[in-house]
Amino acid sequence: MSPVVAQPGWRSRSVRSAMVDGQTILHGEGLTVPGVYTMSTPQDPAPRPALALNMARTESDLTADSAGSGDGDAGRQRIW
Image 1 (cartoon, rainbow, N blue to C red):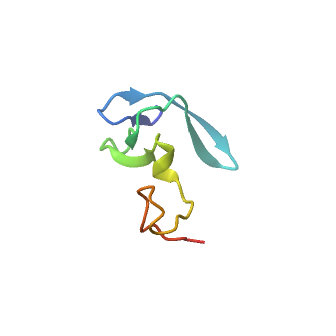
Image 2 (image 1 turned 60 degrees about the vertical axis):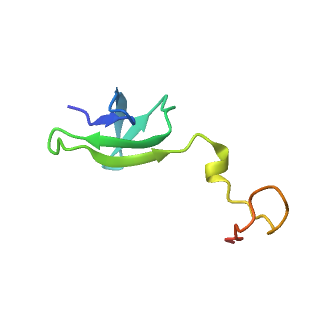
Image 3 (image 1 turned 90 degrees about the vertical axis):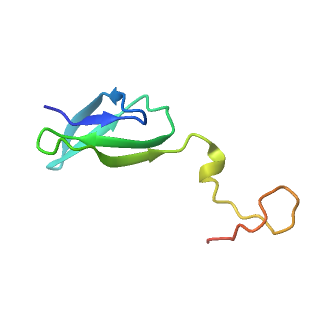
């Protein structure tokens, strides 16, 4: 039996699995609801956090901004 991945709100999503170099790789397609997805398996039925999905590009924007530029992003620091 395959692992069960649930999107925020507990709606289960189908995943497909493949063996690559002796490890199980899971592929989840069509994940569109932002939030933390959980995964459970027959051996461990308790839902555990598996991945987080951020749909808004600004949540993943790592570009630097100078303080006081007037665009509302003052205070972010350059990380590289």
